[in-house]
Length: 490
Image 1: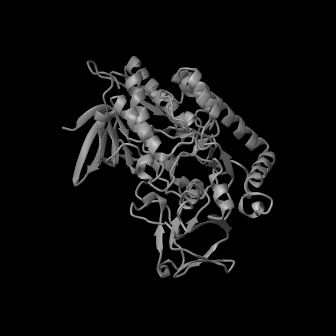
Image 2: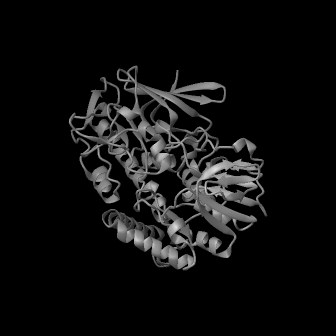
Image 3: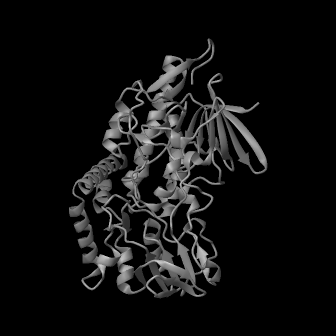
């Protein structure tokens, strides 16, 4: 017989370890297992190994609500974040619950049993488990490979082409000519780090991105920690950063021209009057139509000013034997080309779902509170914000899932299903982001509605009230399937 758990969590990264903590804290009587497809804790922070890997959010909001970040750097490097996640798992007694090398393939819901049957691949073996609630915490992109365009003439190129998601441990770029294709968070991280030892690094972009410099260390936060207990200081800085982030986002959406002008003027102040900021750092879109790129301590700008790095805004015509020929006719020599061209979005952590034998098409569902799927019982996905730190929303999602579980226990029901009661409600894409990686894959994700609880707020304060304090029984969430006499509810 298959092993049975009250809850199965998919993924042992930042989200999955957080989910386990909240479950232990708020539903201590529930059994759970974490299924992790890889052989290590950490998710994104273990997968990505490229030079300079770091957070693009401050650790006072990217960190867990329940575990203070106590290191000096607020913009932290990847290994430090990985240690933070692993320490949380170890010290919280979460590690023994993790089943490594269990790649989840599918899940099938049975209303009669009020349970999911989860199928996973472990090496050459197929493993099945059952659970009453399934919590997907494996993120939103494929771990198998990143997105690499079909570059013209690539076969002629004699150098090395690399995607940051599969960074080779043996890569030696010291003294080499490197071209990094892209202008997003990964590119602006790679360029200054590789420029420290490479012969020269060129950031090749089709169009500019908004780039904002910020100190790697938060001086006020570090002082506050020396005056107050760690948890109190952490909470104060966390709320300060949350409120400032909300304020900045609101101003950016309401007065985009003003925010755009301020960002560009800060870049000009960093790079000086002779740098062509209009061409290389002035996007055609408004702030927050795509995510802003953060550069700690102006490291990208310093690399550009020193001459160890440069930026080229142009389109690729073709790869050549020795590098890349551009549409303008210019050529970039490259011993190494890094294709920092984004992710492949993946819905439901790559799983297939059925409900009572009927296949679930996520793109045909509506997203309930940004975490559940219309018509799909006892299943939630943990997603973060696009305009703020990932973990802020994940923490709230975990607390809401625990509230759901406790409500079902209290009412003797085994099934919670979000159902649409307004067929006339209009829909919109799940994410309103113009980034290429979003546009390539968003059709497979659920839609959002124009009214609560089907509309995504992208606002921590609103979500805090909605997910932590509002009534569980809101009319859209239906509770059913009472437990037979003598059997406990979910």
